[in-house]
Image 1 (cartoon, rainbow, N blue to C red):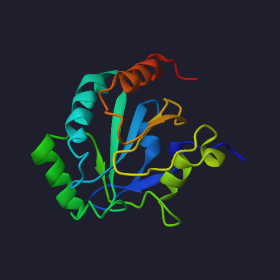
Image 2: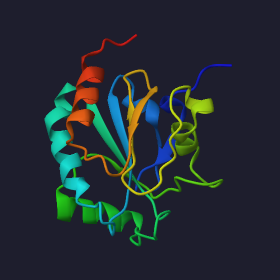
Image 3: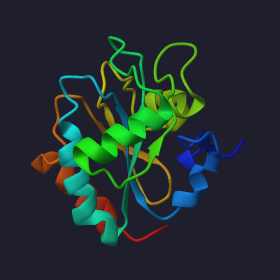
Length: 168
């Protein structure tokens, strides 16, 4: 059986179009479950700054809004995108709302959060703004809990390390 990577998954953009994550092959990814009405929503500004700094070096940030925690994502898919653009100037991809926990979790999140599936980490999102770091080969490399700011030294060092690695 072939070992999975994030490239084996498809997701929907905010308009409902199916997107293969293989589109991001060769990039370092930071996958984040987000919500517009959360106390951690200001992390969007730090995510955008991180994206602006490292996009040219190969970082992509993928935002998946979710209503799984405290019903803090009341907006429609279009509403989420509009909110992100107007409030935070977001230019990284914002995908359709998904489930990120429980038996109905999107297959991508089941893969990201389960060591038996991803071979590296066991870390289910416990709240909004849980972050998964993916290497250039589509493999889970690390995770950062909600409290870890996207511009923290820990996050930046790990992103820089992965960006400087050669593809295998």
